Amino acid sequence: MVYCDRPVTAWIDPNETRSNWGQDQDDTLPDRARPTIERAAETGLPFQYREQRYFDGTLSDVRLDGIEYTSGEYVVNGGVMGDHALKLHARGLIWVTEEPAQCRRFKLQVVRDSPPADTVPYGDYDVWQRYQFGSVTVDPIEGPTFEPDDNDIQTERTTAPFGALLKPVRLHVSELELIRNPSFAQYRLEEREEWEEYGAVFRWKGNAFQQRVE
Image (cartoon, rainbow, N blue to C red; front, side, top):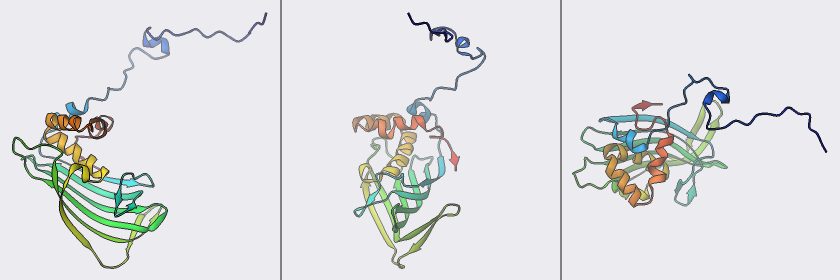
């Protein structure tokens, strides 16, 4: 027979009080993340936010003219006006991480006018964009610096469906659509089988649906 001289640790019943887990009963757990649609419905209009984003090799689903851009830095301003018009403006740089000579400087505007009662969320959007090709140098402190190949600046104005927008743009637009018509927007995303990707995902973004400047 083999004996073990190690001390025996008592099992803890998970159904017992929290104090048995070494926590005071006065301690409180963090608030649970509230559902996306509940938070969106509480947002007052007009709504506006500003965010700065930086992606170091982590940018995904951004493919333009056959080039997969994997890094970027941009500032985005989004909002829903008092009349429920949707506006999104972004400007910045995107580039290929392994090929800094593959860089694009851009400005982008996405607009959807104030909707009548039967306007369907996630429909068509008026899109204006201006871009210029060049190379980028990334300083670890100062950030990226753009050097244009030439002075050729290209401008495009189109009408595009939601699915044709780049994924980062779709995420920004979706937050605004959920604000301006929460129930209908949720229904449309579920109908499109995209609720998890463009709706439920905001449950884990603590500052979604909040006026904010970053």
